[in-house]
Image (cartoon, rainbow, N blue to C red):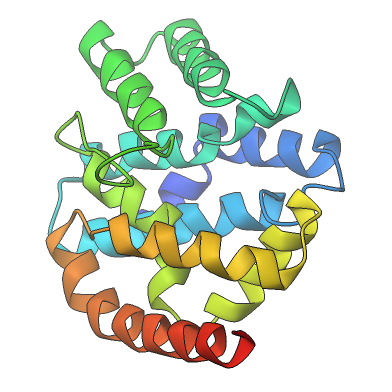
Length: 203
């Protein structure tokens, strides 16, 4: 019997979107790569299942995760509204999703845009917390330094400049979902302390 996650990953709106990113994304997107989308998709489902969300909610989250960086196919700045519209159009074309579900996925993707002041991310839909936590899960995982390095490479900045930017983000960031708080809270604190130590050594 196919697992729920496997069934969701084989949903055409998910699988075909990821395949399109693999084929067409700019290879200089070292951080926002197809691997990042695959990682966010996997992590989103893990978090949502850990918090016992319904199978329909998992499907909507998976679609949002698959499309959340699809706007990078068109442009880098302000790509989120483009990806959100791509998701809405695909869902409408499939004829299997209500206008309310389309709006929910649209809002989730829009919520992945980092906020410049105040909290780093704000959830404006009931499902956004799980997608947002998956999108920045590396802040609370062992691959924190690897992902920070990839982002520095993508932005074409030295790590010495990337570290203060990352510190500022982490200070404004909070986990949005119960599972995110449980799974990533402690490791994020450890990563932040290690980051501060590096910054102090560089002074």
